[in-house]
Image 1: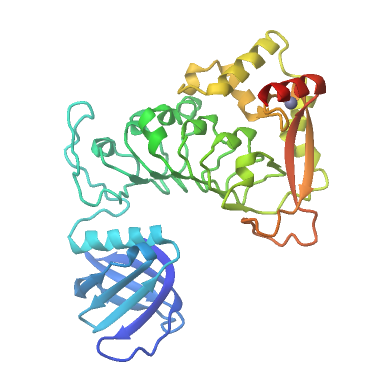
Image 2: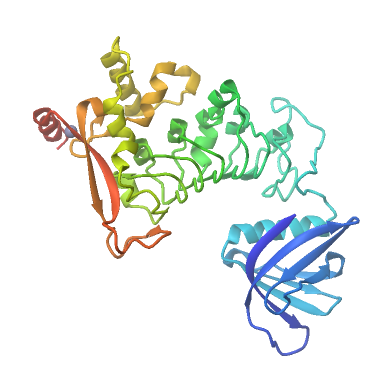
Length: 402
Ligand SMILES: [Zn+2]
């Protein structure tokens, strides 16, 4: 099942157009081994159905601009489609092409060539449409697609991404809507694929909307080329300050989470697109939900080797080597959520050594930050920053840097 929201205009062949582009729903269904294209909009409130068998021509030359046209023989009509989500339209086009070429690759139907182990076979260009893969779960045959650039694993019931996936030059990875495994072990190894050199150098878009994410994994820092991170509709109570280390990040879509503030770090101010929802920013007890402030109150932190642990963490943050989670001592894992840079001297710090400052301001008028809800009557977004308690050392470091 492939579904898109788009603008559609239907025109009879060799006649003047009488319809205008209208917001529409367009989807493909399969009934008794036949595929149908269904259209629903204000012209066709009850829906209009085309047999894909009657599809005569596909005009895809303007696909990159988000436009596609489909010419049918029966009825003799052309559907002009415009879709803002060009990627979705591309997937839609690929799905159509697969049907036209009589290849079934719809969700729930695995297309499984003879699976060959990654080490003893190379199936380059195994399929000209390697951009669109839709299977019910992760299938190891994907590891053979050495040219795979886009992998969509949406709405999988229990998704485990094997570490070897990191050896593929994937640019776009989408696991939105997929359920993560529940066992602690599989969760611990879940992000191991990020530690591979190949994917770290190619992945530009990571979409993980609606995956019940509670914390952003620190392994994301391995993905140095990341430009778009989509983490809408998760259970994130905060964005860790390390997110500021993703220097190439341009789009951060973090709407529908439980954020009470946003880390004030340079890359976030430079984003071209930043989506947030304004749900908890004005919560009267927001300080109780501030993760850095609550860290200071925590008394559970064991005191043995505490400062050594902190030093190890700071050293690790300085050049973040390609380590898997298990290569890092477990007691350190939790600290990644609290580590950040001093906003003045840029030294790595933890709430033990810094003051937590929260300043609210409305981003300037030309900012691309988009808040889903009206924030006109409010005081702006609470931006959280960390500042060394020891001002003398902070100043000294600052002089050293300059
Ligand atoms: Zn400082």
